[in-house]
Image (cartoon, rainbow, N blue to C red; front, side, top):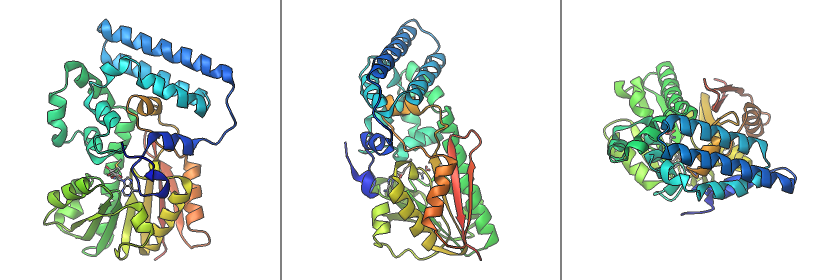
Length: 345
Ligand SMILES: C[S@@+](CC[C@H](N)C(=O)[O-])C[C@H]1O[C@@H](n2cnc3c(N)ncnc32)[C@H](O)[C@@H]1O
């Protein structure tokens, strides 16, 4: 699996590094590890017994996800670091990995966490239907849970919010709106934009570090104003693209992997690419998400979670002294938070 690049913003996310970046507190009480291990063992063993005795998968995974969330929340991050590989190597993984979404996330066929095909499982796109149909009955039942978990609902809402913002911005500037999506993945908000299908967006640049995703966007949006660009946070910060100026710049599913210093530098760069009246929007999973423990263990998908306050701090550090309007708000189930920085006209 690809490692390490998260710290310089080039991407490709190693879950262990995310946990190390997130850690900021004093050493744990050694007794806590014993308690946490015991709680984990109990939860995992109950889950196995339930799977074997045919308990409804939804109930099993809901209970397990809540137990993992509580262990992650209550114990020290270093205790959690020990817990994660124990959970991952427990035989219950054999059941959970029958879910195509959990398995894709855990195996990371593209070499990094959170690739665009993984998101396609969350969006329920036709492209992943074969993988779902060829899964076991149990796998499909677990997928019915994971695709409707709070995190997945929030990701679909995020896609809808982005499409709506693009349309609002495009309707305020008919024919001239220029949009930049950073870490665009498969740009699944694109088909939801009425302005794009009406041809009223001047250009919508979709930048991503994964050449497979860039190729998919180039193919799927051929003949539209979408321009697929292969580039990373690092190449953007290094000034290696001449992209021009935009009315709307946004990053979704990216800040969750960026440590604060890179997050601030990227926000500053994005604001510098805004035309007067332009907006930069970035999203981040929040500490209120309740499936974090399941994601970090059985999906091996660690994220840097940020509160509304932390989002506001990134915004204020990136625009010190500038005349901008900053707003921060949570999505409807509070799993994702949004921050918008708007330049004056
Ligand atoms: C979770 S997906 C989100 C995709 C899309 N924005 C969405 O919301 O569906 C994360 C995307 O970020 C891209 N990515 C991760 N780190 C990146 C970086 N440093 N620079 C550019 N793209 C990056 C990945 O290739 C992947 O397509």
